[in-house]
Amino acid sequence: MPGMKKERVLVITGGHGPGLDGARAIAEALVGDGMKVSQAEESSAIKRLDSGSYDCVVLTPNSHITEADVLSLEDFVRGGGGLVAVGAPGSVKGRDMIAGLLGCRVTEHSQPFDFKVGVTDASHPIVHRLGEFLIHDEMSVLEKGADAHAVLASWWGGRGVPMLLVRSEGKGRVAVLANGRTAQALAHPTWRRLLSRSARWSAGEDWSKKTVKVGIVGYGGAFNMGKLHAEACARARLLPVAVCDLDPKRVAIAKGELGDHVRTFSDLGRMLAETDVELCVIVTPHNTHAPLSIQCLEAGRHVVTEKPYTITVAEATKVIETAKRVGRMATVFHNRRWDGDFLAMKRIVESGAIGDPFHIECFFGGFGEPRPDWWRSYKEHSGGAFYDWGAHFADWVLSLMPHRIESVSGSVHKRVWHQVSNEDHIEAFVRFVGGSTASIQQSSIAAIPKSRFRILGTRGGIEQRTAEPNDGLRVVSFRDGQRTESTQPCLASDWDAFWRNVADHLI
Image (cartoon, rainbow, N blue to C red; front, top):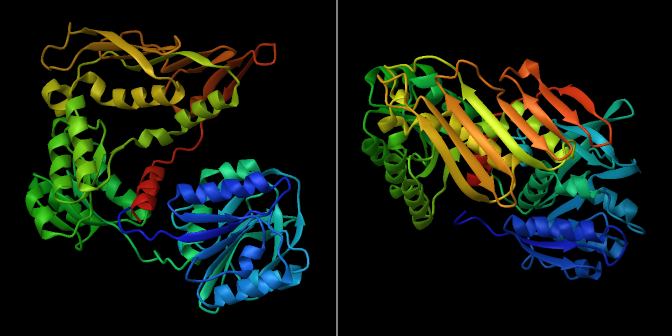
């Protein structure tokens, strides 16, 4: 983001051994997060440390630290520098001395296996918005010193052991990440986030009280989405401060539900002019998404827009170009990327259980009159029957079929419900480069519905008959040469993950 400090980081990779690739991966991850990274294979670089040249030093599991290195690191940290130790540093002669600086010593390493890591101090900025996560790695068992503080922990031998320790040394900060010794751990998105935050925190950043002020544009009435967005923002350490809605009854409800500190408006221009809102959440009829998003962006605000992003491609392009021009974030609330059934399908596909997916069928709807008193039933406001759940199904298909679209065709029927303008039955057929296909069908005149999802692969298939999570997913696999069939459970949904990502990006 503009104005963000660009930390200068020295990564000690070590000069040889099986851990060198991992050490370089650590350096690449920090570069990818916007830091200015130098790599040194020899520990002699530590002896030349200068706080004017670096903000932070990262020791990788491949590092070999001497007593002279430890003395140099101590001077660097006490003078205000940061130190991050990933895994157990390969200390030889300086093992006892480095343990004093790190505030811990390693008592043992296990073979790699899957284990859970949980947060023990949610108030510490390194773990803001993080929950329990599963990781595949060696278990580095740390013995904590008296002045070190554990903010992550796991279980080993019937007792809790720290997975992330922090401490102060003089004017500087030290963070010890017990994980980061296998390729799987280094690629884990949560662990990479911890690595980046540990480097930034040890280098002196403090975002513990930082937030982003949020304005909700359109508080009611469908599905209470305004209230849900405000509450999810608050859980992600974003601060709802304003609500704008044309309906006086809705702004009164917002005040009652969110608190008297929230200012309410019936005019978006006034809200933008009279408040210091930094992020606007657009929760309005689909045909208003583009003009309202552009209005907020032009006023210097970031924007999250409910799906669908806009009604037309031209509108979407204009929103994106405006965001780029003014240097603000503009994104769409694709919360259902974190639906438990979709996450389970994606995991099954990625496991190889059904081979390579080549055809996906989706269906939603049934037989029944669309509500004539709802704007979503009218094409001029909603965009059409595909512009509601269709946005989610299209997004799911594109996530499960990782190929470029080659062509889109389809059919539309308007036969029964003439009191509304949305289509009665609509189907899209998508062809991807390489020949894979997908069909998405929505209907309000389907007397006999189809399964919600059917995914065919070269070694099996997945079927989801209904949207009920308890029904699970039917999986048929020929991966091992024999037919197996099972019902796989859906995973837990986590819509808040969207807002945690937005908060991490902006904060």
